[in-house]
Amino acid sequence: MKKGIRFRVNGVDTALEVESHLTLLQVVRERLSLTGAKFGCGIQVCGTCTLLLNGKPVSACSVLAVDADGSDVLTVEGLAKDGQLHPLQEAFMEVGALQCGYCTPGFLLTAKALLDENPHPSEEEIRSYLAGNFCRCGCYQEIVRAIQKVAGE
Amino acid sequence: MKTFDYLEPTTVGEACALLKQGRGEARVFAGGALMTILMKEGLLQPKTLINIKRISALKGIDFHPAQGLAIGALVTHHELETSKTVKEKLPILCAVEKEVANIRVRSMATIGGNLASGEPLTDLPQVFIALDARIRIASSSGERVMALEDLYIDYYQTSLAEDEIITQVIVPPAPERSGIEYIRFSSSSVVDKPCVGVAARISLGVEKACQTVRIVLGCVGPTPVRAKKAEAVVVGKPLDARLAEEAGSVASGECSPVSDLRGSEQYKRAIVGVLVRRALARAYEDASQS
Ligand SMILES: Cc1cc2nc3c(=O)[nH]c(=O)nc-3n(C[C@H](O)[C@H](O)[C@H](O)COP(=O)(O)OP(=O)(O)OC[C@H]3O[C@@H](n4cnc5c(N)ncnc54)[C@H](O)[C@@H]3O)c2cc1C
Ligand code: FES
Ligand code: FES
Image (cartoon, rainbow over all chains, first blue to last red; front, side, top):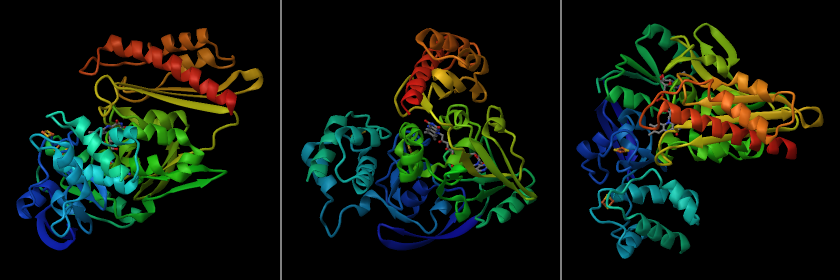
């Protein structure tokens, strides 16, 4: 079944016709060409497909696109504003919180959701909120440090 | 995933009527945490999905001193975790929620879906059963309320009829001088599903004797298990280390764990014994201090 959906993606009103069985990740990557979010496990475990749906982190691999009708969606492409990188992006570069970068969009958006909810988290709160995002290159120490840097500012 | 019809009713009545019309080929879709996985793997291919998330009557958390805490089926794990009302009235639920899955699952998945799924590797059923929770259920012909304990039949099987929807979870006020503890044991990463989860609740009678005792074991059988023989070991007596140990050892014989990646049957039984002993001791201490 096809269904018309309207949502805001990175601040832009977007209307699409989508098949009911497509995931939000498929639609964002393949129809909107926003390829920052990646496919990893497909079962809500790794976090590399993370998007913010109405400000909350979700696994886009496991959200139906039709279910995002009426929502506000933020992808990593929407983090920078007016050519200025988001402070988290700056901090990730400065601290060297990535190697291959496959997990980075998911970590950035999850960290943004955390800071929006709790602007000055403790190290333990950071680790616990991010426990469901995996980095196969093992940059965890640097990722936590980058977030602490922004949280302390 | 196969395509399907997708409907978004806005009232409970409408949703139940659609389920009835679907004659077993329509499925309730809440947070979708389990549904999307089952559909992607081809384990479930419903003809129609009834997304209930537009039904506002299923949202929100209320507290009444006489009835207790009423949690709407659509409340997400993260809402429960961060609710001020819950933190004040039943903080155990916030503590349990902090350890459920990961932040993305907690943001999407619902309490109703967690309880209705009949998934064996979950945390909330054993905690709510220990709290004597009841569920409110709506169908195309009316409404009923039942003990959560009576919902579960087998792996992924519940006593809900095709056209029934859980609308609310009700946790009655605890008796005076009660304590509760939940211990979740994960044998791999903390964000993995639990290997074993044990909930214990004790309320005290005269001379610090245990009056009401609930010991509920999760993840070690097709359904959550009330360890009634272990409860009987403790009832009527003040708890001490020996009694807690004995209850643990009795409880480890009251479940039916299977060997899998999270541990062998024998290992899980041993864990049950340890967790029951610890959970009872903490629940008792909690009750003694309240
Ligand atoms: C990676 C991962 C890790 C997880 N870890 C944990 C964990 O540590 N602890 C834990 O407790 N759980 C865990 N879960 C389970 C998760 O919490 C449940 O799958 C989830 O709560 C299901 O809720 P949902 O709203 O997404 O339901 P859905 O996927 O939408 O539905 C699940 C089932 O329930 C039915 N249903 C949903 N709502 C209702 C209703 N109101 N009335 C009647 N039927 C209904 C659906 O038809 C379906 O059969 C995990 C899940 C994943 C994917
Ligand atoms: S791809 Fe979605 S969580 Fe791994
Ligand atoms: S930087 Fe390679 S997976 Fe994280």
